[in-house]
Image (cartoon, rainbow, N blue to C red; front, top):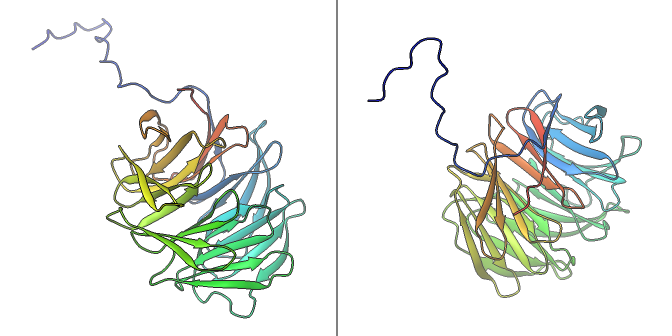
Length: 317
């Protein structure tokens, strides 16, 4: 074996870490008392994050790193938040089976979306449509509901076989994707008809995100991210590399890159076209549960079971 290092001398250099690792450009935001389950970039300098069992949504200044304000949702557990285009409205989902709409500048509750037929179980996910006029909510009651935001009217109920964990709108607002098991469902927003059933994952889908055009990404408990063309229903790429279930996925604003995070505590970046992995961001000490890119694509925010929110400078390829 190698000779022992005499006392007083520096230890031999460690073997180089496998490239590429996270750059120095990361800021850590602390304040939540439980897992950060959802993160979204707001207008200007703001970032919003939701803490799971602490029931709060916190707004942060990217510049100072300070918590600007804390919104108590009244839910014991928050599972997801979404901001409308323009950032004036926020929707929250949680254990109390209510979909709540908030006016962000004042932090006031505008309305609870109940409609003619409210959700009857935990609401797991919320998403605004293209121009913020429609909101979709997914629930363990085996439905996705689409709401008219201004009036609070229930527009459509999309029935599923199991509890729904994820929901996303395409950029053009034509399609809604949802998942209640290992298959991805794609619906026509206007008619409420199911257009596609896309199979490939071997365990449940945990998160969905649309990129440019008709490209959709799905994260799964099978440790992969898959990309699909929702027009044809074809699987495009299988992104393999995570060493545990994948629980978060996001596209860069131009659609050229995908970020994914999961139980292996890493954030991984992938090239959308080729499916190749080009960077790993390390720093979280627990599961990565949520991801969001800033509007200019320069920053990536990640929320984790370690109760922190991290904002990374997006590395170039």
